[in-house]
Each structure stands twice: as C-alpha cells, then as structure tokens.
Image: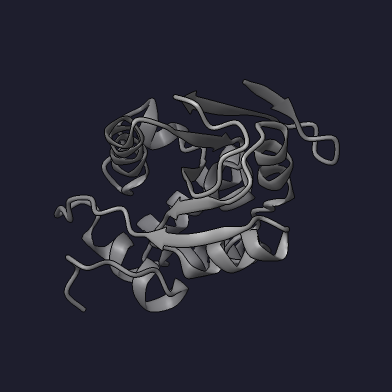
Length: 179
C-alpha cells in the first residue's frame, strides 16, 4: 500500500503480510528509508539488517506490517545525510554531524505512521524497535503500542561505533552491544 503524507508530500509504503484488519497487537516495524544501506549496501549502519530482520519476524509471526517511511537520514534527507557522512569521516559522530548541519539528532515525524496504521485497520501494535524515543514519539502521535521488542542485528567492525553512539547518545537499547 502507498500513502502520501499531506504535510510533507512524501510517499510512504506499508508492506502488509497476512490478515491485520481490525486486529490489535499487530507486529509492526516503523522503518525509515536508508538508501545508502538498503540499496548501496553501506555497512556503516544497521538499517538494512534491521529491515531484513523485521521482514523475517513478520513472516515468522504469520502477519504484520512494515511501515517504510521516506525519512532518509533520520529525516534530514539524502543530500544532508551525505554531508553528515563527510563530517563523520572527519571525526564527528552521527549526532554531532546532524547538529553541525543545523538539525536535531532526529528530525523524523511519526503522525504519518498513525494515519497509515488507521487506514490499514490496525488497532494497536507490537513495535519492533531498539529506540525508546521512537516509541515515545509514536505514542505522542497517537499510535497505540501494546509492547515493544528489540531487533537484534550483528555488531560488525563497520557499524560498532555507530551502534555505540546510538546507544550512548540516543538511548537505543542493544542486548548484544558492550558499552
């Protein structure tokens, strides 16, 4: 299913598996686009691994939804994300790079997720995320969350620093990541 966000004009997608209409506790991943990882196969982040893990979990459950939101680079867009990468190559972390470019660490907006879930007839969700702030912001947008579950992905040499920053500076929770 495709949805156009009236506020931003962005076109988002909902990948639906199984019968979800009118159900509560639907397994849902609210996932933001990451062209660099999902198309260009960058190993710098864990976005593609999270998406693939969520798809496997929805299939394992027999039903669920992946909301694929067009909010590249935590909402700063591809152009600015590439600029942030350049700053990271010079030593800034992912949070400081966004701030140096004049953005908040996370510019994403989740009202569109609520509208999408309502359109699909989903009453409440079991959210697949490592991000407590995403959970808070979805709740503030009006999404009914019954439970959250982490998405465990491999920590690699290429993404370890990124994941560490997500944990220490952004509050993400990773069971397999040492401080």
